[in-house]
Length: 124
Image (tube, rainbow, N blue to C red):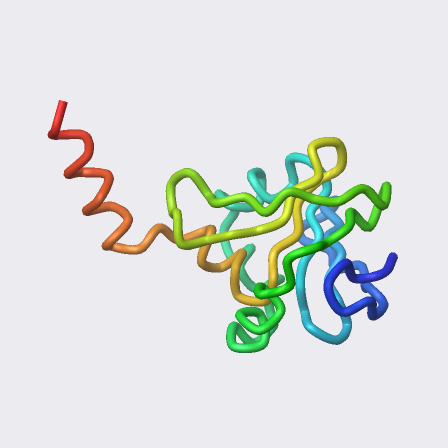
Protein backbone atom coordinates (compact mmCIF):
# COMPACT_ATOMS: atom_id res chain seq x y z
CA UNK A 1 0.00 0.00 0.00
CA UNK A 2 1.11 3.57 -0.68
CA UNK A 3 0.90 6.37 1.91
CA UNK A 4 -1.94 8.75 1.00
CA UNK A 5 0.11 11.76 2.13
CA UNK A 6 3.77 11.31 1.09
CA UNK A 7 3.27 8.35 -1.31
CA UNK A 8 5.97 6.23 0.33
CA UNK A 9 5.53 2.54 1.10
CA UNK A 10 3.37 1.52 4.03
CA UNK A 11 4.63 -1.26 6.31
CA UNK A 12 2.47 -3.64 8.31
CA UNK A 13 2.74 -3.25 12.08
CA UNK A 14 1.15 -5.85 14.33
CA UNK A 15 -0.54 -5.00 17.60
CA UNK A 16 -1.31 -7.96 19.83
CA UNK A 17 -1.92 -11.25 18.11
CA UNK A 18 -4.15 -10.33 15.23
CA UNK A 19 -4.46 -6.57 14.60
CA UNK A 20 -2.37 -5.36 11.66
CA UNK A 21 -2.02 -1.62 11.04
CA UNK A 22 -0.34 0.07 8.08
CA UNK A 23 2.29 2.71 8.91
CA UNK A 24 4.24 4.83 6.44
CA UNK A 25 7.96 4.09 6.30
CA UNK A 26 8.69 7.79 5.65
CA UNK A 27 6.27 10.19 7.39
CA UNK A 28 5.04 7.54 9.91
CA UNK A 29 1.36 8.30 9.25
CA UNK A 30 -0.98 5.44 10.15
CA UNK A 31 -3.82 3.85 8.15
CA UNK A 32 -6.54 2.11 10.16
CA UNK A 33 -9.05 -0.11 8.40
CA UNK A 34 -12.66 0.54 9.45
CA UNK A 35 -13.10 0.08 13.21
CA UNK A 36 -9.42 -0.46 14.05
CA UNK A 37 -8.68 3.01 15.46
CA UNK A 38 -11.71 2.87 17.73
CA UNK A 39 -10.73 -0.62 18.91
CA UNK A 40 -7.10 0.34 19.56
CA UNK A 41 -8.05 3.59 21.32
CA UNK A 42 -8.95 1.58 24.42
CA UNK A 43 -6.09 -0.91 24.26
CA UNK A 44 -3.16 -0.78 26.64
CA UNK A 45 0.11 0.50 25.11
CA UNK A 46 -1.43 0.84 21.63
CA UNK A 47 0.03 4.35 21.28
CA UNK A 48 3.42 2.74 20.59
CA UNK A 49 2.34 2.03 17.01
CA UNK A 50 2.34 5.84 16.59
CA UNK A 51 6.12 6.10 16.47
CA UNK A 52 6.44 9.17 14.27
CA UNK A 53 7.47 12.71 15.13
CA UNK A 54 4.41 14.90 15.83
CA UNK A 55 6.21 17.87 14.21
CA UNK A 56 6.45 15.91 10.96
CA UNK A 57 2.79 14.94 11.40
CA UNK A 58 1.77 18.61 11.73
CA UNK A 59 3.55 19.36 8.46
CA UNK A 60 1.71 16.57 6.62
CA UNK A 61 -1.60 17.48 8.29
CA UNK A 62 -1.64 20.62 6.12
CA UNK A 63 -2.13 18.51 2.98
CA UNK A 64 -5.78 18.93 2.04
CA UNK A 65 -6.60 16.65 -0.90
CA UNK A 66 -5.99 13.07 0.20
CA UNK A 67 -7.20 9.92 -1.53
CA UNK A 68 -8.08 6.64 0.18
CA UNK A 69 -5.21 4.14 -0.19
CA UNK A 70 -7.77 1.32 -0.61
CA UNK A 71 -10.25 2.69 -3.20
CA UNK A 72 -8.67 5.91 -4.47
CA UNK A 73 -11.70 8.09 -3.62
CA UNK A 74 -11.13 11.49 -2.02
CA UNK A 75 -11.26 11.21 1.77
CA UNK A 76 -13.05 13.64 4.05
CA UNK A 77 -11.09 15.73 6.54
CA UNK A 78 -12.86 15.05 9.83
CA UNK A 79 -12.61 16.65 13.26
CA UNK A 80 -12.80 14.24 16.18
CA UNK A 81 -16.11 14.91 17.99
CA UNK A 82 -14.54 14.67 21.46
CA UNK A 83 -11.31 16.52 20.65
CA UNK A 84 -12.00 19.16 18.02
CA UNK A 85 -8.31 20.05 17.61
CA UNK A 86 -7.65 16.63 16.03
CA UNK A 87 -8.25 16.43 12.28
CA UNK A 88 -7.81 13.18 10.37
CA UNK A 89 -8.82 11.85 6.96
CA UNK A 90 -11.60 9.29 6.63
CA UNK A 91 -12.99 7.09 3.87
CA UNK A 92 -16.59 6.15 4.65
CA UNK A 93 -16.04 2.67 3.25
CA UNK A 94 -12.51 1.71 4.25
CA UNK A 95 -11.01 3.50 7.24
CA UNK A 96 -9.10 6.48 8.53
CA UNK A 97 -5.63 8.00 8.26
CA UNK A 98 -3.79 9.74 11.10
CA UNK A 99 -0.64 11.79 10.65
CA UNK A 100 2.30 11.05 12.97
CA UNK A 101 1.37 11.87 16.56
CA UNK A 102 -2.38 12.15 15.93
CA UNK A 103 -3.33 8.67 17.12
CA UNK A 104 -1.59 9.22 20.46
CA UNK A 105 -3.47 12.52 20.80
CA UNK A 106 -6.72 10.80 19.74
CA UNK A 107 -6.21 8.11 22.35
CA UNK A 108 -5.72 10.47 25.27
CA UNK A 109 -8.22 13.22 25.94
CA UNK A 110 -6.38 16.19 27.37
CA UNK A 111 -7.36 17.85 30.62
CA UNK A 112 -8.63 20.79 28.57
CA UNK A 113 -10.90 18.45 26.53
CA UNK A 114 -12.34 16.97 29.72
CA UNK A 115 -12.86 20.44 31.25
CA UNK A 116 -14.71 21.61 28.10
CA UNK A 117 -16.94 18.51 28.18
CA UNK A 118 -17.65 19.15 31.87
CA UNK A 119 -18.71 22.76 31.18
CA UNK A 120 -20.90 21.77 28.23
CA UNK A 121 -22.56 19.08 30.34
CA UNK A 122 -23.47 21.61 33.05
CA UNK A 123 -25.00 24.22 30.72
CA UNK A 124 -28.20 22.26 30.07
